[in-house]
Length: 389
Ligand code: GLU
Image 1 (cartoon, rainbow, N blue to C red):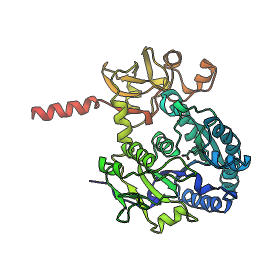
Image 2 (cartoon, protein in one colour; image 1 turned 135 degrees about the vertical axis):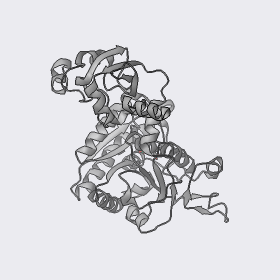
Image 3 (cartoon, rainbow, N blue to C red; image 1 turned 120 degrees about the horizontal axis):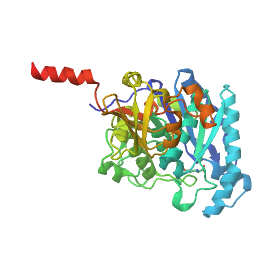
Image 4 (cartoon, rainbow, N blue to C red; image 1 turned 135 degrees about the horizontal axis):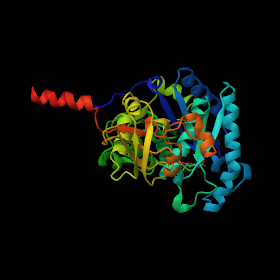
């Protein structure tokens, strides 16, 4: 059954991507009034217990305006310099506007490598989740000043989708000057129909993505559909809506036109399918019976429950978890490198800092990074005796 569209307050964790043209006016610079209204919308969602993450464009556009650069296409090094100037102004603006509602902002600048390479991916994810735990709103952008042509996203639509999947968000909202997906570019084709619900991103849907980029932003409909594929494939719904009105999130709630892309599965299933699907685990951890029981009740694997570490793996690699009878019971992403894992195996979490010389993570394999691959023995027994009955 295809998932149904639901009100924003029914989501748990929302990533909101904001396009440059919404935040920055070519002549007058930052649109402070709009930003304050946006932050009020964010505060309203957070008051309902929803985690909010912002992926904000606008560094280059703001830098252009601060540096008073002439209109026209910038060379890569010029846009990097503009981003260096603009990002300061952008982060300050978010921080000031969120503080009106007593919300603290935390700046995160990512490059493509930070989301593609698992070790860095885990690091970035841990920082973002800590920020959320501390009640701050992460304000994320690409680290344009160091991203080179070959290794950059270049558009924040796909970056926002990766952030959404990385953080297990259940909704991604892309706000720009486009209110949603049409069957054809509406400014070229008078018969273009607006699509309110997209159950699946089929090749036909992909073909509808015309080049609807605005002058200030890079991403057109093409990158939005790419973002949709990343997000929905990992179980995260996506909305494309216009941010041109004040309070765009409230407007969506009040029925403003927007396109909704259904998630293809639940976030847990998509992520755990990925972990379970790794072909060659880089190593394994043999655990004791107490840890096996803890894992089966949905807990993380702590160093204390690990009896033996086999193989050579790095933090973030997929490893097998071996239960009492020597068979694999779970797969997960290692929270430590193999040599560190060996040092802390069997030790209490409180001892880790003294052994490693730094305060590591408390889990050897975090439950969010783990999937059970074999049922408990008694479940197997139950199936066997059923078969005999
Ligand atoms: N990272 C760019 C900026 O902040 C924006 C990229 C985009 O518009 O998607 O200026």
